Image (cartoon, rainbow over all chains, first blue to last red; front, side, top):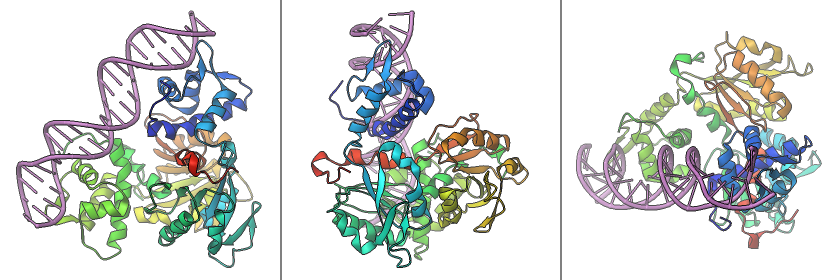
Amino acid sequence: MRYHKIPDETVRRLPLYLRGLMVSAGQGVEHISSQALADAVGVNAWQIRKDFSYFGDFGTPGVGYNIATLAKGIQKILRLDLIRKAALVGVGDLGSALLAYPGFKLFGLEIAAAFDVDPKKIGKVINGVEIEDAAAIDTLRQREISLAIVAVPRAAAQSIVEQLVTAGIKGILNFAPCKVSTPKRVKVITLDIAMELARLPYYIPRAEQTSEG
Amino acid sequence: MRYHKIPDETVRRLPLYLRGLMVSAGQGVEHISSQALADAVGVNAWQIRKDFSYFGDFGTPGVGYNIATLAKGIQKILRLDLIRKAALVGVGDLGSALLAYPGFKLFGLEIAAAFDVDPKKIGKVINGVEIEDAAAIDTLRQREISLAIVAVPRAAAQSIVEQLVTAGIKGILNFAPCKVSTPKRVKVITLDIAMELARLPYYIPRAEQTSEG
DNA sequence: CCATGTGAAGGTATTCACAGCC
DNA sequence: GGCTGTGAATACCTTCACATGG
């Protein structure tokens, strides 16, 4: 089933598998079965096998998957072998935390540029990255950075996104709590932290509620 | 179609609608059509109408939805009228940013307690919340807090989650990049920031790649 | 014998088209 | 005329069962 349209849900799970493989690799294991990976990441074994089957034959029947080979394969599918740098716009509390966040490294990603409008922040260096004036966003094209993380207030988000698109940015991770519009060719993933917390109470049965605020 | 099982995807979208309604309400509008809300939040109009239809008749044909009534209705469905307090565990870079994050207020939520294991942090006050020793997590039961946000390193996550479950926590928003296990009655939403960034390159067409790192 | 890979079945969510109501 | 609410149709994703290969 090598040539097929890839379900979006499969793409969403690929980084999860990659994370699980990286963690297993760090424990010195060489092969892993779909069942073992399933236990590690919390997805059904047959779902994992189906997902991998979209991309080709990664596994060996009776043995499982070679962790290093599979990890490389997923990195290539996700294009993490080619794209490694991201720019950050908005170095407030959340932006600073993202600059210091060690988790991107696992995927080969790093924040290679940071921007803010606040003159007091411009010129400061956080985690080896110098904060630049947001007016310099258009230099991203020459610097061959095609990913951006937006961590600015809602009111500024759409305008910043438009600057990023002009600067040749092709993918945006948006933390601003609002919809942002881009040309179809530019992919946006919006991640609203408060929204995630807000749907949690729904799953708490009424009988079990312990907190009323 | 008042009594029906609610699709999980619908529940996921409810906070999005609520956010859109809150923003519209702040602009002095009283009614909104499914089309206008659709434009505001980036979901199809028929999807919105279908979602609301699971819960009853919120709208008036020819007029639209009363924003205040609909917002209250969604808050009630999500149980945001009853549950307003959350505890934070792990006051590192990300945890501190979450403590300062103003976005929870829109949903009536607040971080009402914070814990860390680092003696240097314990006793400090951030945004009006005093950081307590993680050993005090079990006091959450008496304080009637049933939601928790976990922002600790991967290695500590499972152990912290178990303490939280013992303390009577019923819903967890997990930022640690790993699967955490809980009894079925405790709902966990894991939000791995790096994973979200990592699937963005997939959507960048090869021809358009401008960055290779 | 064990684990993968995959058509087919089953289930869930989205989209459509239009009846009903203001 | 305009907008909601919803059965029906469609598309999508998950789960199953088992053939296939080491």
